[in-house]
Image (cartoon, rainbow, N blue to C red; front, top):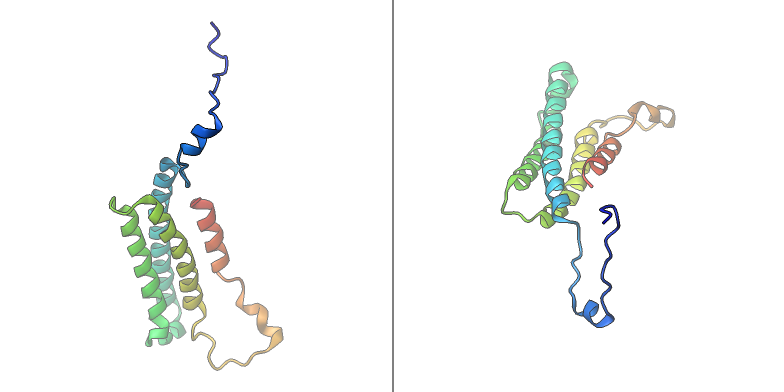
Length: 154
């Protein structure tokens, strides 16, 4: 007998197929891997945010002045706290993996807002808008964040 021969699948009749309940969603092993990746992404985000904040405070004297008010330190602290909370949820065996994937999507959006608020909120007060100077601001870090998150977490 040839072991390489394909297995024949039994076809079900219309009535037995309609009685069967269909499961919608991703397989459990993929959800488990996604939960592990979410924990990594959240810790990576929190660590990157912390390093960027410390570097900015230690290297730029004008940034230290901005950190005297909530607009300077608030978005950073809230972003790091959110990321650590998501990492804790991803580490908990009590949270179902399907629920964790919904939390991951919300985290992606909230983290993007955290990056944007941290980068731009209150940074350009007193500056006049001049169209020829609009290129000095560069690319927002939100775009690489969205691409990174989408690639690492399915």
